[in-house]
Length: 146
Image: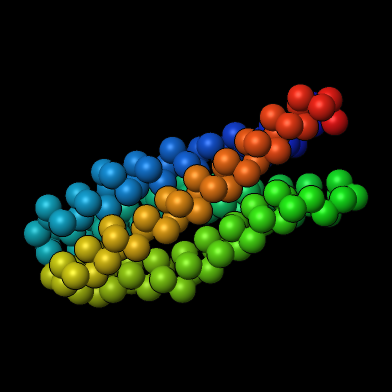
């Protein structure tokens, strides 16, 4: 068993748990704040959640890229996972960061908060797919004693 593969799986699982908490609890809760309270809380929230999410996402992409490049074979599951990770990074940067910035600018606009909840299902799906691809790969590797 390769410990880096296990670390990859643990990072992926941590992100899956985190994204479900964000999707089912944190983002919907924004709709219950009044605009003044949300404006204050949201800035605190984004700073704090970044401290947790950023290292995990950086670790996820770094480990996946490293393993893909060092294994010597370009297996379809690893390529798929890296594509899912890259897509997740792109939508985070170009969709979700701007949505959070809009909330900071205009916390009265409930449509932005609703879009955040609605569109975040894509990230839930991506994080789950990444974990699933890596879990299947890990179990297959372990089963075959690779």
